[in-house]
Length: 544
Ligand code: GLN
Image 1 (cartoon, protein in one colour):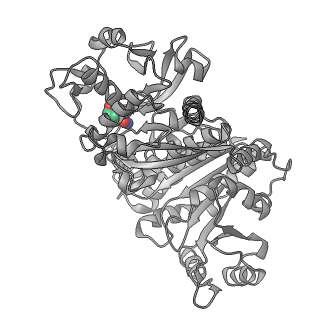
Image 2 (tube, rainbow, N blue to C red):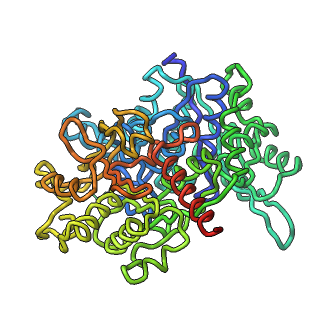
């Protein structure tokens, strides 16, 4: 299959944030549902080697793959839509491209030649693009090019696409996503930005094969025909990409527009089966017709940019649908919570999730939130730093170690209940030096975690430096906080729970990365279930 792998390049024009990732994932979903094996790759034109060092305010969440790559959040969409894992090879940045080329230059691999953008950088881009196809695992690779056509930093990528379009034996097409704005004053949809964007691609020598037009209003045939005429494209290859209620509607909208068929025609591939989307539709129907609703507080410090918690928000949607429950996320800034106002700020929540994070800011708000959830018996899920806060809170308020802390925030605390292990201590580099990717964990029988997973051996993805300090484990256990998930290789505590609470679970790993539409994450499902049960109990208690 390898040599015949075909490629769809997805580019964007006019503005950023048009949803190339969702269009790519939706197309992949449809092709997968027809029986093709598909993967999606993202090429990011920034110079960071990976997004691991980027502030979430700048670029949203950093998604972590099973093999430990810190990647763009679009890879999360790919996994959620396709239910197939991505890997290191699925995300490439300009930083990584240059790093490889410069390393080769230092090794003398270019034999004294002048190293240039063309051909050396473009060759490395093409090599990275072909890696997934060369595995022989995929019929089709969809490669999304980040940024907007016309940006200086995107040029080498567009040039690589141009070269590949002319490479003998390399079968590919280009799908270009643009915006058709609606001018309210004249009541018109405008095609000029699309025409300009296609012109800009043409100046780089690339004729798009398919255009997807993002729009707030339905496009009439006139608009499609006009775009087709000006942009050298058949009218049926002009696809309407109308705003949707939820991103999970987009595959169905693309199916109505026959995007999958147009792509297969252009790639000279057969349609195979009609896409079978039964499970997908069942999910959508549960999502749209919930039987109840609950409020979940998401406490974090990056809430101004909701994309910082993308996978958590989506995992809550998946778990809500599987419980036929609408989950209203109440975004709460950790800096706004303190012991004095926690009861007021957190009232009316049916469940509380304390989010992952790094550094000191907002930490005391998170700890006060945990205290409230523990004492008021509100279902609680703590993820990574959220779990560490649960440990610190328990140490301070139950074990009585008033100064207990993580050495990340307080290097000299007398009670370092969360600390840096020896191997991590001498690392000064910031990129890629954390515990990253999937690690095994053994779940204890009889725990809430076991109820959720229904199995002992699990593997979950990590992204952190600090760990539970096992020196204190027996004291925690005696006082009622139990380690219910342990890494069998090194005894690290991966899950904690407390007794006498309806549902209080803290996890050192990130379950949100593994939640998909067809396989909502068991811990999120149980967290939502516990939150609805507690709410129902309270409602019936209030009625008597
Ligand atoms: N800052 C913490 C650590 O490095 C937690 C990281 C996280 O929440 N992802 O251990």
